[in-house]
Image 1 (spheres, rainbow, N blue to C red):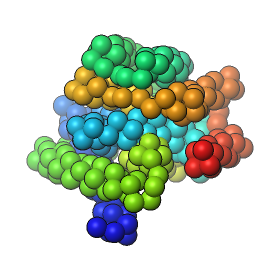
Image 2 (image 1 turned 90 degrees about the vertical axis):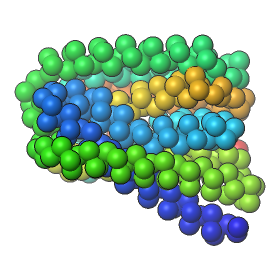
Image 3 (image 1 turned 135 degrees about the horizontal axis):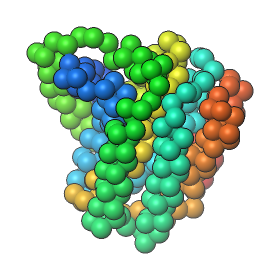
Image 4 (image 1 turned 180 degrees about the vertical axis):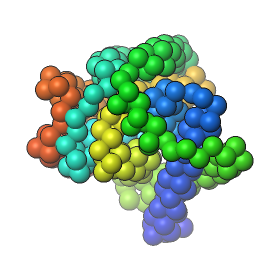
Length: 315
């Protein structure tokens, strides 16, 4: 199979992942809304996890294939692109003014979990114990978020209510979930298989492919959700989705390592993981300005992301 065929299969796989993620998010969030669950709780849990579903399925399949570099690259690359690419593009569409008080807790949690991931990766393997630790941290975060989401302002609640819509059809939403899961599995298999072959044929490491092509591809649901929300000026959803997705992605790495140990490339400790932490820390100055993300700050984030990609290939 030549390189063009692999590229086409990769693109097809990304398309399946995108529509699978969209179907899962729409179906599960609207189904939860029809059951009377608070819209903000849905947004911070179901939507955040749903947009991370492509990373979840791709990481599991890659881990079972023994492609640890692809797993690490996918998760770390997605977290970097979520802030450096997606948050930046959203701010360019509409400067973001965030009112959600819960984000003042979520941002430090994202930074702490990013740092914890770096520390537990120092022995170059993320195994069962580390996976359980991360999973417990994620579970605690979900419980905290769900409880405190009920205390958010009516303005934030109305944003999430409008975003989720009012389609309460049980059959239609269940069908969305089923088709979404099927599409995710098909897409993940195509992306993992084609990525491994492309890396070999192009002489590029699986880690680089994972951080760039796979990470951006699996982040498309976050990009789609954020662009729509930014256009509607639902700024809390944009930032909440991105921060929540980054937290879930680290939780995904923990869950995957429970199923199969993840070997960590030593180069990740020197460059990619520190960059991920720096991008997480870059949100702090935004917090200090009252959670206002201007177009200029969006441009700065985007430039740093492009520099990261350039240095990645130069390295």
